[in-house]
Structures are given as structure tokens and as C-alpha cells.
Length: 123
Image: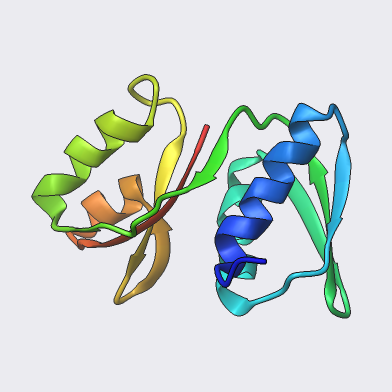
């Protein structure tokens, strides 16, 4: 069992998608994971609800969801290079970045001119 709750949860979601399941129940729970799922839910890739310690996730239009390991730190100028590395095409998906203003996607981080730590990518 890994110590990285975010990476484990995102891998469990992708394994469920590859097994052609529409929903999954995660028993891992953390504030960082819930914030990441909220960003992905806002983009329309998944839908989730929290029942006590369990997180019920319904997969909607998800293609790929992975954690970025190691968690690179990047300035505003470097974000575009990482976006090209992890996303398959321009304007297709987003990279989730942890900044000093909270979690946000790379588009919002570039608008606010904030760099941070790369957490995951979604498309």
C-alpha cells in the first residue's frame, strides 16, 4: 500500500474506467483529494459525493487522469512546457496546480500569473 492517497485514488479511478465501470467507491479520503475531485467535477469529467469516509464517484467523459510524480514545481513561464509534455493537444484537458492561492487548473494559474506545484493532469 502506497503512502500517496491522491495517486492511489486517481489510479483506482482509471482502473475502474479501463474495466468499463461507470462508478467506483473510494475509501481513501483527504482534503487535497476532495479539492482535486471538485476541480475535475467542475470541468464535467466526473461526478462525486461524500458519504462519511467513502467517496462515490461516477465516471462521465473521462479519457485520462493521472498524478504527476515527482511533483515538479514550476514558474508561470514553465507551465506551458509541462502542459505540452502531459496533454495530447492544445485546449484539450488541463493540468492541476497547487499554488499559494489554492488548487487550480493551469489556465487559471496563467491568468492570475501564479506558479506552483504540479499535481495531476486530466483529459
